[in-house]
Image (cartoon, rainbow, N blue to C red):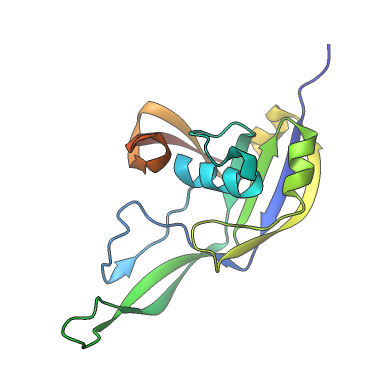
Length: 176
């Protein structure tokens, strides 16, 4: 009997922002410390364009998000122009420092394709680059520190999935 393997791609960067569920233009906008199902689906669609019309994740079998903490940055935003006058505001945005995202596949060819690309968590300027590709078992992957979600009807609401007719996304977190 063959042991199940995960092919894991490690992506890392200097900083990363994950759009919070509220995503309103409050004075403070803190990044989440976890991915949502639609963000993971978006990452999969970026890596594999043939999956653009797919409603859920199929190639990514597991993931872990790690970071060294959060930094508060100030950002100037422009409100809609009213009577040809520009309105400016300053918001404080929390961004993850040195995020590391481990993405596991059960198909080596998907991992090899992903390892040749970069990704972003939510904003295109926050790019994570591939650093490593390695094999592990599902049990060993579960022991790696980080935050991962599992979809669950008993979980907490993290948004509405635009890929699934805006159905509620509910998750439970696995934090190691």
